Amino acid sequence: MKTNIYPPLILLLIVSFLVFSAWCAFQAAGLGSRVTDADYYSKGLKYTSTEVERRAAEVLGWNLETSLDGRRLTFRLSDHDGRAITGATGTLYLAIPGTAENVYLPLAETGPGRYLVTLDKRITGAIQARIELERRGARLNRHLLLNP
Image 1: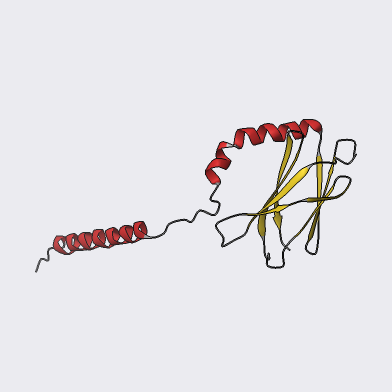
Image 2 (image 1 turned 180 degrees about the vertical axis):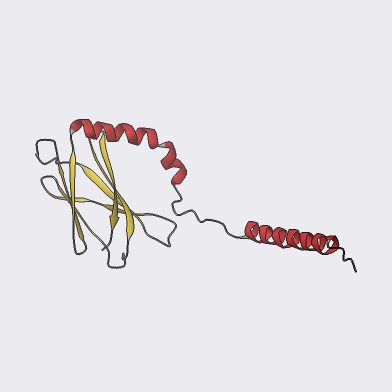
């Protein structure tokens, strides 16, 4: 007795195609990846100017030391000779997991070249952060990974 194997194979091919099509439709109907930074497009447009500012800070020889003591985050900004840089304005940007918007925290100058920010008690776990210090058109940006 000779059995024809082609009808079951064709049926298997059709069922596989339908299952794959249903899976594709399910994936397309899902939410997809969530945007964690609503301002990502303008940041991409500002990339060139940020690079120019970063190079200006490097030419000036700025150094940034960071220390975390409990919930107090301290930055020491100095020039290439180790002298404190005063009068800079600074902001700390925190990308909190599970939130769509960044948290912006202004830095306070507590002494010559020393800038301080205190983190809220609700901020916990590993957090991507970016510090931005600016003085007279020169800007310094650094990325940090905080774990308060």
